[in-house]
Image 1 (spheres, rainbow, N blue to C red):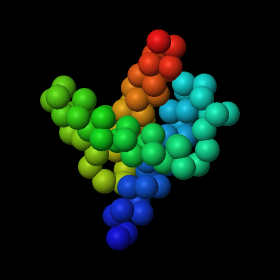
Image 2: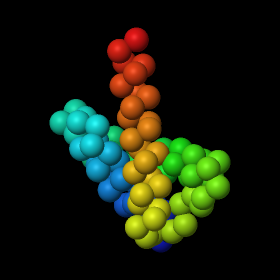
Image 3: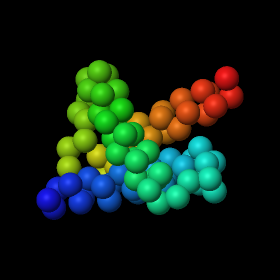
Image 4: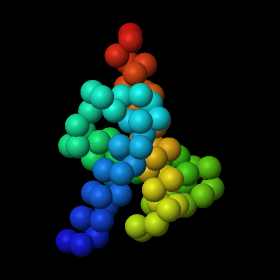
Length: 84
């Protein structure tokens, strides 16, 4: 249960930071930030693993970076599909 809570917190922070970077912060709430961060952690883990690195390794700075990169990719894809 504790790991799940930490994963949600990490996802929330990553989603919030990604929304600031992608300038979507004003249109997103806390729940959206958490969802983007958790999905971003999964995407980032896949991308980093495909490039020979590690995915999310726990509650640390590296995992935050992985989740942040994945969240930015996710928000970038959402922006592309909203324009089309």
